[in-house]
Length: 291
Image (cartoon, rainbow, N blue to C red; front, top):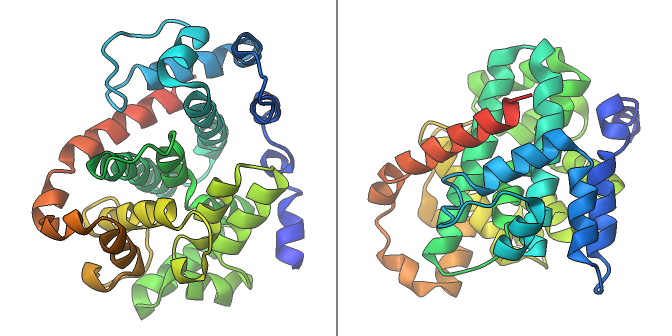
């Protein structure tokens, strides 16, 4: 589609940050030397500082602080750290660039994205699943397509928000009306161009149409359910829901089928317990926004 091709004219979308590209290439090698990965990350001093701050933040709750990338890899694991690097580098790049636009609107999207990432991590811990930080990074980037559309034509995305608010329709329907594509398609297009991990691509492309997904269904369901919780409890971003019946949501049905013990979860009580997650989200945003 014409809109998708035009997106590549945006400088920030043309290529991934160099360090991130190298990291993705290195971790594909089963015989990768962690010292080489550490050296690659450390070529970017700002990224290194942010990654270490995130690793030492309340999000991970490490008993012993890590002071170097090599130590972080040993403590957290190579794949987990690589996923943190991917999320931090992409998030940082767009957060800093977006300061010139309508700050309040972008901050609302950052807040929703960070909160979804942290809540996803809490849910994964609740069911005893280790997704190697893909749940956190997937939550962070799930609405990446919205960010891209806002970078492309902010005035048009404001129209999308007005439609979802005034007409009570979902964001994807409003996006199609204004742009001809929705944020799922846009996010998938860029994520594939960047050769992001397939799990992240699937989360971005299918988080609100999980029934069409054949792979990474469990991971995507975790992130989508966290996304909906955030939509209803103060960390929303204009998805268009007036009310959400969680029991009817495909993501919740999938999770209940795979983890029957979640049937005992008091959703109302659980959402009130998310206050601590929102504090962690705020801490993450402060780290990323730092120079």
